[in-house]
Length: 476
Image (cartoon, rainbow, N blue to C red; front, side):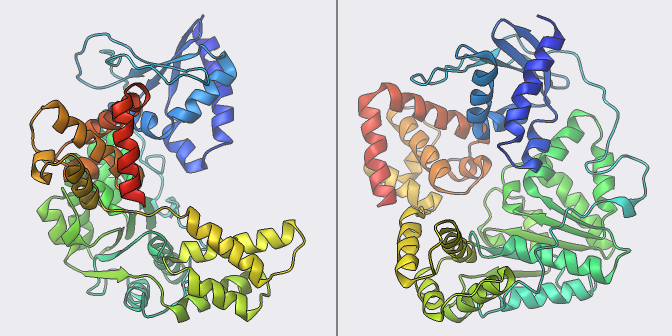
């Protein structure tokens, strides 16, 4: 079949995928893909890098499988054609068979790597080259502002520093401003709020919010297209640069290097840099020291879990904004029982409102108890990578240093792979961060470990027992 058939099949797949993932994820991970050919039920797609291919397999293989089965049937196959510069490799195909409901996908070794190089026209990450920088979209969410970021003892320093930066970007000692803390405490909200306030006070300033994940992908594209200098120049034009989840730079040497040069230029020219992270600079693993030292130049402000009074205020503010009235005793009950983070507080409130609306039920303490109990039960316990390594090492009666060693002994390799598997499953850490903390491996090794554990769990009864027992130890 010709390329038109491949394009038609891929467009049908995209139509399904687009309806089931976030717009930004679709734009980042599916728009760059090119359908190459369709032979029988085998669709070949071209992706721009090995990293891109690995990201698809890690995060989107399930939705790809559903989409292809929907269009091509149960025997559908997907073949990746990875286009890389200056790469000389054998023409082996990496094939993902789309299985029927009672089978797991099968993987062959290698990836197709053609020798031709795609010489596409240079484009900046967000704008067409040549347009004025005032046209750069800030990527900010106006719903995240200081008005609905409730102040309390847990966040007062960070919020106050954020307001100071917004009033005088680049003109305070808080440069960079690094906001760090656990999941759901408001790091992204506060970062957006600073940017929104700057745009309001200084409309002429160029403000840009970017997730580290997207920044990394843009850098990979710039290397592939031989436009690295243009990429750097684009970011050096920004007046206020906000980078979310900067810990994901861990283990990515090339991206760290380019970010170092961008950071230096902005700082030396009085521009403001705002960073968010799930940990303080001192706790960041596999990050260049020269970059960590820059992170420490300004202020590192921690967001902690909100106290009881702050939780009450957050709930009251949310209800006020939504135009909903709720008895005080219910608000107090929720605040007393949901303590971890703001996201969980608002989640319970949304569930309460939804239940009341859909089932035409009044707000009652009984309903609140039902939802809170269910919410707490369904909230996964997050453990650290260090804890996982200790539990796995103890289970297999070895030291953590042995688990992290370079040895290729089968029992140690399997223990290491299990530690990586559980780190991926039970923490929010990136593959690169997991690899760097478990024996200084790269993200590809972690990805391979997770696939190996999944395959062995299906085929090896003893290995499946390991997984079940370790799951109990780590989650109970």
